[in-house]
Length: 143
Length: 406
Image (cartoon, rainbow over all chains, first blue to last red):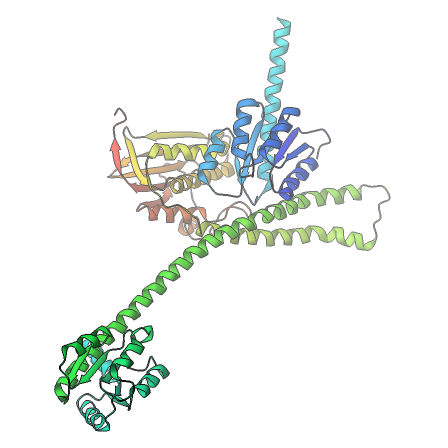
């Protein structure tokens, strides 16, 4: 557990105890955590806060995960995301992966460390990308 | 069949309704002597009706006199004609009249045969024998129909049970998710908390608190173990109650492989995936999601094997080959990992056999894959490749082959 902030993660699930279980986990692991119960609430947070990683359920009442991921792909391409689902439904899974989900996790999660690894790698890629962007900006300013 | 029929008919019990004791004695004598049937006597229409109602299932045949004081034969027939319990009861009318109007009326009321008085023994015996046999065949057919209906109802119940199981499994899944997740959170945190407390200067907890802190890890491991067992049962329920819609569609084999690669996503990152396909488009008629599931299983097994074995000297690689070969579609997945040890080769495909550590694999992947491929009329094979690494091969019947150019 490091004291410095790992990044900002948004957890989206309509089942409160699941949402809070994940929120708690990433808070303990040093993340700044946001949570939402459906796609619309998640989008509102994305508009207001710079989020690094989003973890979303697929099947939710109201705006579901597929629609949310499509919105992110179109309007917040800087946000990396992974999906989770209790349904084993190939079509939705394919949709999620094609929209750019890093991975899709089946509930119940046998090993949360697998989700940690994916979340961490999304954040690392984001940091890497930001570092490169900063370098480019410096280069541009110097020239 | 014929012998059994004769034997069963020989046990027949016949109700004779006739007001003349003389006729009764005569008929009883004829039938007993000639066929061994048991004949019971009712001396009036009223008594006959009473005996019919008292034991509606008992009688195999009704012998009915038409002309009786009080309730006559027609009256009695009218009373039982609309009663479903007597719908299959053969009725033989005894009459001294040859009036065709009487006959028609009796037929309309459900009579089956007529015997002209005075009764001729051999004629009576043969006609009654024929009716009893027909009734027996009727009964047997009805028994068969009832059996079949029961079987169908059983199948329906199984299907309903499967749907119910799948629904229940999903309902149980959500609570399992946060039970298991929170337990994993605690498992990660309790050691950190204990260490933090131990580092507090002058920390000396009351004995009971210390006992609790010491017991927590063990309690958590046991609870987690219980949750995992429930999750495994639910997983199996879900797998076997899989509501595959059973719709087979014609798809390009290359699409199936492409979908499987998309689903495997980052699990294949860092691995060279080489895909070779034959020149033409091979189409198969399959339940696409099932075959994709098989391919995902094979690809992620290969990726797991490579991840465990990763060495600096060898670049991990998975070769996927698909194309028509010997009249069938063959898809093979070959990794350059360590290959399968003999004991694994022997047991792979056994239900719940897994080489993965607890919490990683269900041991269902290969056995389900085999079942899916078999259900599609295909073959599932695996072996170590001569050049090293494991190779899994599935073959499926081809629907059609098309040229890429067309």
